[in-house]
Picture: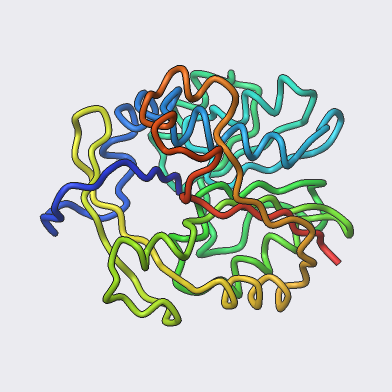
Length: 246
């Protein structure tokens, strides 16, 4: 349930889509300190979640645990779930045996009580799902009233820019072949327009607090010259939300 947006190669259609077990090590190494993850997505999530000291935080699609490490360093009590067993093994190696990690995904109920968490983070997870109704209801269930869901998804405009013939207003699947650390992987993702996202959030019992299109973290322009050449503080990539459970 992790993702990235490296430049895609031509799709072969031969590899199993979203099989993170097959490229977990390559993905974890590639995304540790790259532009999209290390200098953009994780810093943006951490900025949005703010002070988490003493808060119970669930990282849905925790991958190899990079975000969980940062949250724990900030004083959060962290729990992670992921559908990839190998990703969870990497997270365990990184976080230690006493960390709460669970093999689970949003296609079934999560193994937690109602109101078990103060915050839930779903970073680059929801865009793997065709239907958001049941998954969002489940995330609302495990949050306390007033708790927060912090989510990052593919920006819906990016799909239209990449494929002008695509119907922006239709929810539809698309697949691309990506390269992580020299290893090829096929990702199958779901595009949905902005109004479909916001409607799903409201129907699940969330109030939108923040919608963000952030700039990269400080230092990105020095490490990645291509950012300096963009001529803007921000670039179009993901869309970030802070949602309150009502």
